[in-house]
Picture 1: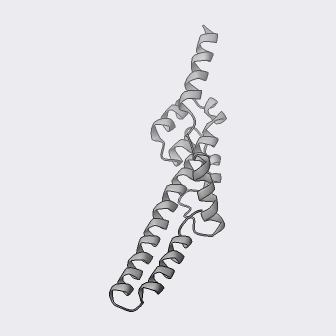
Picture 2: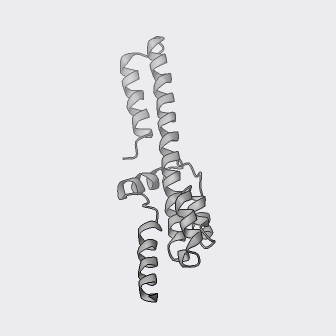
Picture 3: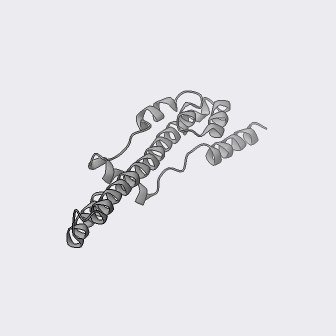
Length: 141
């Protein structure tokens, strides 16, 4: 009976405990923006990991409320995975916030550039050059 309970608890923990996190391309993109000082830090990954030591804290901090309730019920066993879940969820939130911020900045810069071209403030050659610079500034690769 105890063995079945332990196996069921372990299976439940492994299937519901951890956030999926970012894939390798997303990690590289976020790291690139962080290195250039363009990243948005909406959530602190270290704090998310630290809160994972509390009952469901990492999951609640990472906006994973359903997992937070499960981790709250499975505490103290959830200490094994909830810090990782809080860290990964924080990084994922920061990635999405950064992507949104970068896209808004890019669109604003391109709109300003289009307005300059429409107002004959710059010619087509200068427009093309500045557009390429804007694209390079806001592209992660």
